[in-house]
Each structure stands twice: as C-alpha cells, then as structure tokens.
Image 1: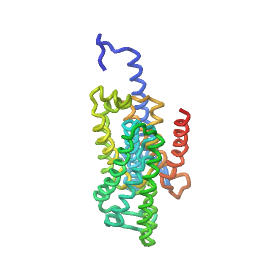
Image 2: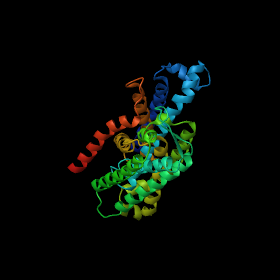
Image 3: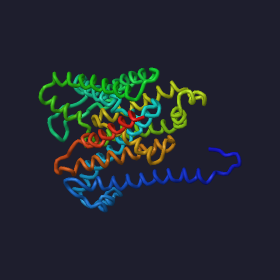
Length: 356
C-alpha cells in the first residue's frame, strides 16, 4: 500500500502488526503441538527427548523407530491435510461469496472419495487388507489421485454452474452440496455391494478420514500440492479481495472474475482430491477454520489465507492427537472428532444466515 506523502499511518502499522503477531503466535503453537503430538500415545516419550531425536541426537533406537516411522509422518500429514482443506475452504468461500463453502459441504470431498474408491476397487490401484492398521495400501498413488481429481472436478463444475444462477443463496448452494454428497455416497455404496467381505471392511474403514495411514511418500505428495496451491492462492490474493467486494466491483478493478473463479475452484479441487485420495473424507475443517480466523484477523486475504492454513494444521493436528489418547490404546479416526466439532459450527452458521 502506497501513501501520497510517503509516510505510513500509525494506525495501519498497528493493524498490520497485530495480524503479524497472530500468525507468528500460530506458528509457535503449531510447533509446540507438533512436539506434544509426537510425544504422546501408547508409548509416552518425553518432549525434550523428542526434540533431541528430531535434531539428530539419537536417544533410543526403539524411540527413533516410533518417531521417524510412525508419529512424525502422521503428525506432519495432519498438518498438511488440515492446511490444505482449510486453504481450499477459504478460497471457495471467497470466490463463491458463500460463507458455507468448503470441500466437504459442497460435496467435493465425497466426490473425491468415490473417485478414489473407483480407482482402488475397479482399477486395482489399492491393495485391500482386513487389518485395522492398514485397511488399504495405495500402490499407485498417482492414478488414485487422478481419478479422485476427475470426480472432484465433476462436482466442482456442477457447483460452478449453480453459482452462476442469479440470486443463488448460501442455502441453495448447501442443498446442492447435500445432493452431490448423497449421489457420490450412493455410488460408493454401489461399489461396496459387489465387494467381498474383506474388500467391504477395507473400503468402509478407508472412508473414515485417518491421517495415521499416511507414509512418507504420501506426505511428500500432499505437501508439494498444498504448498504450490497455497502459493498460487497467495499470488491471487488481491483478486480474491476484489471479488469479496462483489463481482461488479471486481470487474471494475480489472479482475477477470470468471477466470479467477474457475481456476481457483480447480486448484481447490486438486488439493481436496489429493488429501481425500490418501486419507479419506475429513469433514468441516475447511468450513470452520476460515471463520475462526476471520474473527481473529479479519477478511483481508493477505492474512486470511496464511492464517487459515496455520489454523487448519493446528486444528487437525490437535484433533488427531486427541483421537490417539482419548480412548488409548485404541485410536479413533480423526474424522470422527472433526465431525463432532464441525457439525455444531455448521448449524450455527446456518442459523445465523437465516436470522439475517
């Protein structure tokens, strides 16, 4: 931002500084949560020794194996998945001008899950097992992601068509998402009907969103996609700010609204497809995190996008940690906790919309 006399008003500096401190505080909290998440579980590891191990100072061979092969990839997968779902949600809410937009509420997550199920069952890109530790092993993650992406694009195209209808309200968009979710859930059930007992158990288990199934390869793929997508969204942050003010205002500022909306939804669909194809359906993270961040640092996309990314990682990491210790030694799928947290928030947003 430029000022005529070259001086920056003190109020603006305070405005920027406050948002910067919130984001820096989020980074610190995320690091603390990461160390705590790695230290707790069926085997408790002191946080100081977790730090030593991560810094290359081996303390115990057994703990090295637990940290590097089990807990660290799981914790990092939770951070990346939460960040990806959250940034996809904040962009969808902005470009659709719909406060209820997210990969889950608009049916995109279920579409990706159906695509991944088609790839795993019909195309044979996944090895089915009946063990609780590894219900599905994705032996061709690229094909699985591509098929999931295709179905995410299909759902995205339907949402974009609906968004072009004049005076389409958030309630209409949500009902459309419910219809899409039901359609793709029915498709997944159809595939399950023709599966044998082992496949049926495996697919049902896979449908539950669980970051514990991610390995280092899957984490790296998700991390690259989420990082590049977030950079793309940050590059287009001014366009999203303009669209927040209305399509006519954005066009008056020289923004190609249709192109920005189309490309933004495609990139958000890619993020959702990658996460869903590896981890299953994890709901509500992309819905509630952007709204929580808006209450803390406002609607400016320059800070809302990185803030939502951080909070998404923190929220899903905290949920996964709680899922591992709440009924230890049993481990709950993280999607159960996110649904318990997200459903009341979703109802609140709907009620607030009706009051308006």
